Length: 111
Image 1: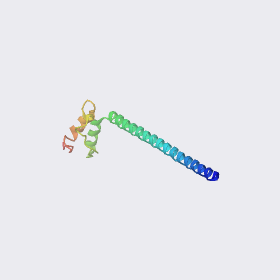
Image 2: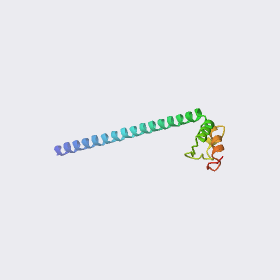
Image 3: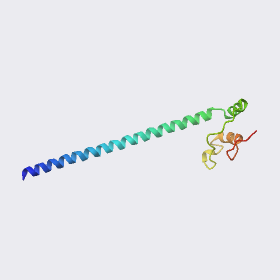
Image 4: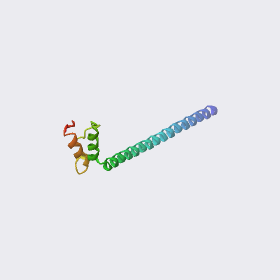
């Protein structure tokens, strides 16, 4: 009888250790996933910041004029969303240049 109780106690102890190990692995994995998400968000923010700085530093009118002089007929990758608050002229000076050269409906205007 004592042997059975001892074996049963040992089996439960092993089972408890195994469950605690699995729980700890799950917690560590969740922590690693959260860190990766933070790194992705940070990289995405840095990319957006770089794109914004490039857009602000580039002289859009001069670039468009130069492209026209070279005879390159380029289209924008995406048309701006007119519902977006970023498309306000005060917040996005490139929208005015875009609309002057592409048009309200996103189709290029032929000068």
